[in-house]
Picture (cartoon, rainbow, N blue to C red):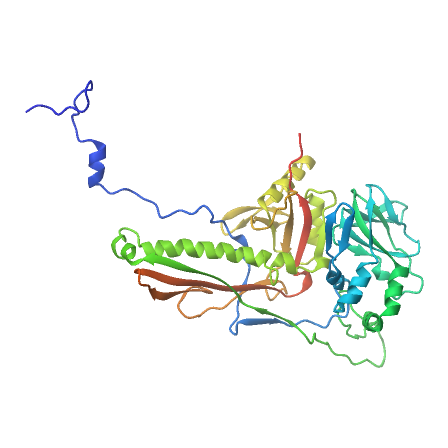
Length: 468
């Protein structure tokens, strides 16, 4: 019997070829892998509240001081910068005013002006004669300290405004100096022009009068209706009665939904289930994708997303662009019990660069067996779902969590029909004429901010690495 040869010019093969042997052997295989799976720290760290009725109402103490929003600006060219009239209702004196014609007339009083770095816009002590809206750029608020030095009281940037605080004062004067930190564009409205619009609109006059009446009511340092408490008295002094008033129109959060229909051919489900169940693997990856979208919505949804619903009074800008230890100190100190920080990975890297420049080593915190970088004991979790702008700027979010601490909570409902995971169900929808099975996969969720200072945002964080 002759030995079988392989190819001309080669030695005969003495054993079974591996390509043939593979036909009789099984392979060692992994489950289907998915690159888009992330750590999803926000979903893991939020305390979740079971919303049995599908709606979560946040009752708060009555607040007389109206929060300050931001005015939106549109630019149609280098010299055509205008205010979007509807967004003027973000100013406290105009909150709730919906006469578009009057808002358009107020918006028309603003004219654009270019500013240069170092330019002084207003001086402390000077009369207030204009209102300003920042279209683009960064400005510093300055004052003279007790010992004669210059103190920086904060940074204001795109969409911020100042000057409207003087409304209702007999002789309003600037309490601070405003200096441009970068070149930019501002919109300026003389008070005389606003007075003309005010004189022509009875509805606006009534609205402003109601606003001034509300702001003159006694409030605590958070703007809530004051409670009259007697303290430090001696003897039989009369003690005033009081009560704690509530907001008559509390916010209600309805559960949102993320859904998809998973389709699997019945032949695949019947014949190709060894060693892994095809339907289970398809469902596993589908649920991962839904959970990824759920976290994105919790951050970016305009109705309930944290980035859009954080109070503007809890938003600050970086002092110089990149996130420095000073910036994170400011952000953490704005609230009690800051539990966690969320940042884009590039923002975390930028923070580490700033620490390296100063010779500082950030700490770490052990969370669920993971070593997480931390600052002042507060863990900094990476979250790639926080947007990164075209200019490589991002945001860093600080959170206090839990109902007991009046923080941020996640919302879901458990015990829903055909529940597969808490707040997520999988419903069989049948088999169509092409023998394809369909499953409806749904996740119900939302998030609620119980009080404004439960969340703070460090905005306009420059993540770009400087050139060496």
